[in-house]
Image (tube, rainbow, N blue to C red; front, side, top):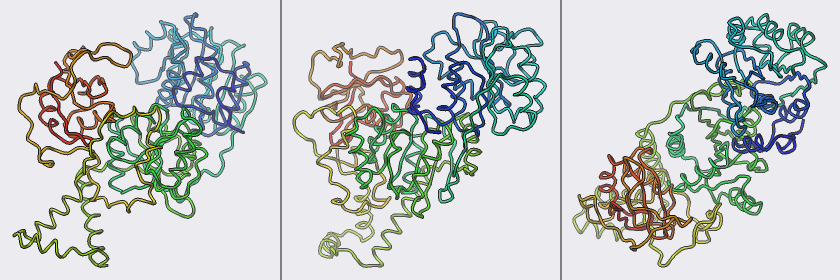
Length: 593
């Protein structure tokens, strides 16, 4: 079965908007096969493995059938476990986001009855539950099925194994005879076939075969990571393993944009690829990636479909893929041509159940790993630098500087001090010179694709070892650069022209924060210095030691910017950042008021 675009499936504008927001750009085989007939109202039997994208295959038609003006249960979805019920309910909520008035309600054992009673009394349109709890509500009279238009049995074979067959039959008996019945199951044992015969009417049968899903040359691991910590863990893993060439997959175009900006702000050579870019831009980025002119490509699934590169070291699933097939397509881009590849997936919260479904679908093992600490990363950097230095010394292939070293020795410097100073210089960031005059603003998509001043990889010296590139951020402390220490006063002047300050829409921006508990600070850098919001957040979080939540609104002007910071951290930010070297400019920061 060929995949189709969602725009080819006859969906309403609200559903198309929802799938676009979720990052779905193309339907999976089971979605492409199931959605069109389901929209016509026929019964359907779907035989498909867990993780194939079947939840959206039945959730989308279900949402389309709901009439929000009727405050009654119109769709009932039965799931074998509470975890699956919660997972399905979350996906239904996301897909129904733009369908005004549609309400979904998960009901399962272990959850408060009062919350379920309240949701049912308010007229939940789509009820997602386990058979036992649904029967409980039917017996109590708190759930009525007389307005039900569609009954969906998800993972029917698992419900059979768990002994729910009698409950399922009773629930189907309570529903109207003219309802639409859907049944999804990986296998069709005899009791399920009898159920189909008794409770469906001329069902359409679809069967999605899964082919060649094993990836023996790819080492598959996952990390349980809070959403707010994904960027930090990603950077640690890149530095720990010294990855030089990889793909990073995100589920949405917005996430691709944000992550690319964050990585660039931290000094990684990253670019992006997604469907909102013009074809010329996409081809240019892909060409640069193929010739290793960029280190990391951040992409959505469909945008990277035509990217065929053999020597990708690692694939990061920054977001868990929507289904098993997308997972296979992603990680199949590493471990090619007889090489061993790495596939690393970040999992947050209940996404672990989704990953378990994917593992069952691929018939593979995805190993859990512990998040490395900052100390481990630093130790690995030091070890790598030591090995590199030792190898150079043993081979003797380096240019000698005996005269310079003799001069330093004659000045009274100890050999160990000279060596330590050299290692310090190797690890230090060299600030970029300030360029006079205004610069053009950054293009909407990817200015990194056209930076003519950056030499291509073939013209650049070999990439330094980890110890030579520990400081990814383009800023340094006043002590390192020889600047004066920051003043203790937090009302520091900044080098910014006076007068009215307006944002791009012409709205005047006050020097006082509109948000309670926030202090508005002014910085002497702006759009003309090629400074973006990600750069501001990066320097404050990393060097100012602020929690990310302490940084509020950011207003960029041509030669300055305003940043709202929590009042409890404002003094610390000023003391730590005033006078540092930031993006090649000496930073001045103080209260805007």
